[in-house]
Image (cartoon, helix red, strand yellow):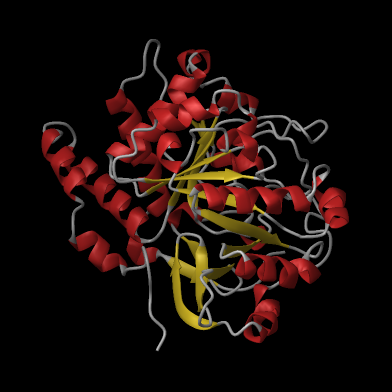
Length: 389
């Protein structure tokens, strides 16, 4: 029988229980808009139970130029002529940008205090930021899992003497590896080599880091999947397959037909992998596979063609047919805009503004409000199937 795992639980359970930290916070704030806050806390709990993610891009700069990069919804400096959203950016508090590092850390710490389960530190390429190690050390993680998303070409920064996951506050590294072929790598990512990435992954594991491969599946690398899978299994590295995520409505984004991950089934079966569990939630449909005896790698495949989540946030969205992600994560970054959905830029919104310093309480309230809007009424949650256009 197929089971669920991790954060996958029914919404009714999420609504019927209160995370202790959230309940205590609700009591402390009972004198101010208690009914509204209670609903926001319920939504926050649902977001956690259904696997919602909190992604903070600490830079928009990168040492690669992947043709499919969504750059966490930020203007991509590697795309000629791409501009930000001037109207929204003008509303960002000047104190945010003037104190960029402190503001980024404040946002992540606020999410952890609220009881958030996972914080993804992303980019751009976060390791290209000179002070990234200080940022990681400054996160007050509490019970949150801290994940560094990286292409790992700059992994030497994590491998300096005396450094390791404990010293840098890192619970996992999600490293991008879309091919093992250096020519395919350079043609589609613009620089570097797959060989260097694989070498760094092995070195990081030897240093004690928990490394997972993220593979973004598209026409450019479909035939490369067996090679990445074999590398993962041979080196006891877990692997997660996702499909390309469209950040705009310009034609030709996929570089061909959208690839349904079900096309990988034969390859997975040939390696002795069988379905262990399936779940649906924020991020869509995910399948975890049983590995054969002696194989330590955990293999997961996310397929939004089987199911992607639509909430009341999605009502009337003109981009629904193009959506390649569904509701998944609350994103922000060095632009200090909240991005609940990469495609619907009309709903990007500035972080809470203030003339002076922005309090931790204001930061927490802002996060709760944005997630509440994303979650909407759980009774109206709908999982939609079919390939995106």
